[in-house]
Image 1 (cartoon, helix red, strand yellow):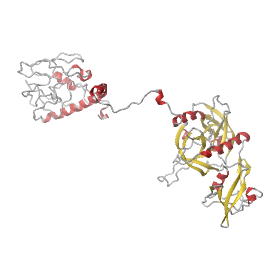
Image 2 (cartoon, one colour):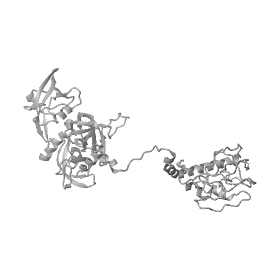
Image 3 (spheres, helix red, strand yellow):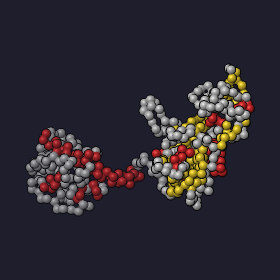
Image 4 (tube, one colour):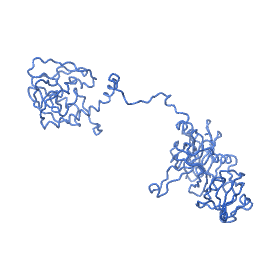
Length: 525
């Protein structure tokens, strides 16, 4: 039934089933009863029974009140004398046809009719209509004589049917239980299935996302950084070791690095003050340390990011838009994705050969762990590619569109160890400046050094020793294709100072190769 009638008083269940709309009407044989006013869904549910008890056929006395559990032998059918509920076997003219008995009444002139009639089949007590009815009444399947109904009474009949439908909605739950309780006897099978509440059935398998998240969340923190002027933001980090070191992004804590405030809040809501141990702008990696660490610190295991394969499952944990302890899932969409990122401020750009994932990453996820299917860290969530204006419907979008990027954990671990040991990171270099503009055919060695002064190829540096010159276009670093200067930088930074790499470059239309032993640069200056 429609909820439009919620709050309306519902009439009690009738003692007889609702009368079909097309059933002919009749009153007592002695005199026709006046028509009862039509009953609307908004009227009190006692209107129909009241009319029935107050309008008796001529020569009959009202029936004494009975308890709800037992039918009243001498009570008339509560709907037999109303226009709103027409009894079985009655005609619209008020006469009882030959061979048909009125519901709840002995026909006039009959001297042999016995009362009460044989008891009806057992039914629930709530179906007996508040104790004023006589069971379910006569059979509604008996063939009824066709007789015209007065047009003025049809509206009352419709109103009564609506009221009966409301009652049916009210007792439907009880009737449903009664039917289900007897389903075995009737042979009716239920098509619903209930889940077991057994704790064993709710156990999460060790490899499920729920189990991994449950284990990792206590080791993930929401970081709040605030500068001395009160500006700051929110990011994420994760427990790196039992000494209280937390790994995160540089851009998460940069605002608090110079005399600001820094705190880390665990998933249980406990907050701890922290301080910056070291940070590397170029790598976008930072390490902070809790000033007073909890006793039960549990570092997250670090995976080997070199062994990650495209299509592997991923789980990202962080605080997107300040919503702490948020878990999202996806896959590794690509590896070695060249990414240049910046926080938009005065800080230098960072370069990475990133893991790409479609797990939802948003502002606030930065610094959080990207986990594999075992729950081990494969990367630090660091950047996203938002939709440009004109793309995906034409509007700018600051949230995730499924293009998220994480620093491979092998690189981040190497940087973190340096920061913990010395407070600064060391970068591998080739000793040559390259163009940072977008390109698709390689990284071109510039004419001048960065800043516009000096030679682009450092005299005596690794590139000079390998024979590289300004104007050379680097096409490959080992087996990785190089399409631009930022891509070359990101690939070089996946190595360590002292590593030897093979560079394939083009000069005067000819392709050449050279082995370059990488040099080192301390800090971000």
